[in-house]
Length: 476
Image (tube, rainbow, N blue to C red; front, side, top):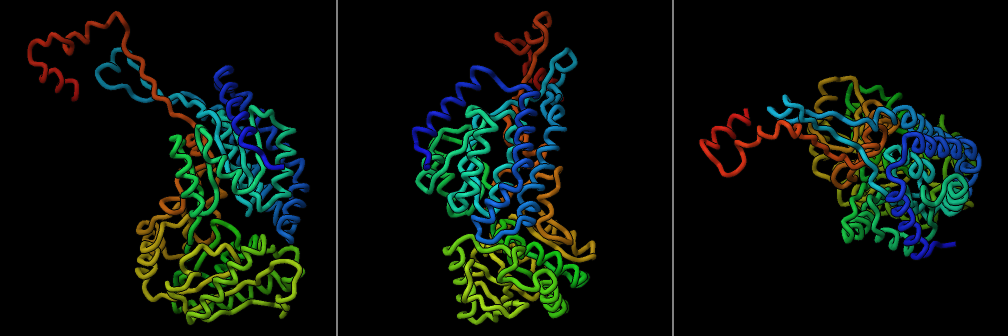
């Protein structure tokens, strides 16, 4: 059943009133919320996996446990462990000379209030629950709108979360685009949106009407740069694991490869070998995930057709020579595209599927120039053992994050913030940075004692003597 505007307005008011009445939750309550979430996910892990399999058509239990369950739990465990340290007052230095007379300065972290959260369908559990490590540890309440494209998983989320949490703590709202649009217009204290850039513009516009601050986790075209020093087979294994996991329906999936011309043939041959090893067959293989629905399937097929029409060479990797024109689910085998150029849609749009354009280069500077000529990506991946080359790629490009000699892995590091930059997003979550992102860093200054008030007399009217000399002495 779709949630109504009245439902959402009622819960938002209820949550705001609850925080005003009870004040910031204690560390004990914050940890309890995190523990409840952790137990709910773990205890129902197979239900979640089965629900995701139904939503996708084919998505193996192992894939869902790997990508949506056991990736969330470490983030929650870390927040539980570190929360007492994160919530401590953070001492700062008061200005001289008043610090010498007892003035103190510090930051006190306080909850923002109610955080609205819109999560996507591609990793429906991970991208809904992982940000809560920061949201809950910061003491906030949550209103959640999961994706209508994964309705079975979204319904399961609502059922389980409604059981585990009071509506003043965590409330889930189901519905389609109209519900989502109304959700973005609510006067939250913060709004987290994970999804595509096109919708993000509407989300940000709606939030701006109420001056609601936003965190946007988007995506874009995350490049892979393969240097001459890279091991071709290992590189292929790591790139294709990331590209075929969830059939490439990942915001951080490698979107295109730039490989040194001397390594191109070896890399391509290694890619074919790797796909044969991972997926001897594809059509009825539960380990190879389906495209989520007909619309996304048609969109990806359109990218392939457009590239071919504009002169690209398309090579499908089909180990068992299966017929994909007759299939129950929307599967697209790994597809390589060569001789690409920027006129092709596959080089303009985020692919979000198992299609990999491959460009050759002669000079590393070509790759850096190409990356810098486009929107800043969510992830950038460099493969090679040349430390100077590695440093040059990292220093001369801008991206949300970098993984060296693998893909996607920087999101798994609990002490690193995760987020985009420019067109790939704004704001960060994960670990301590997530806690800070969903907190108000309240500055507190405690001035000198009343009995020392005479120290201020020289800077109060009526001004006497050389006031500028006094001001300069204070600035030393």
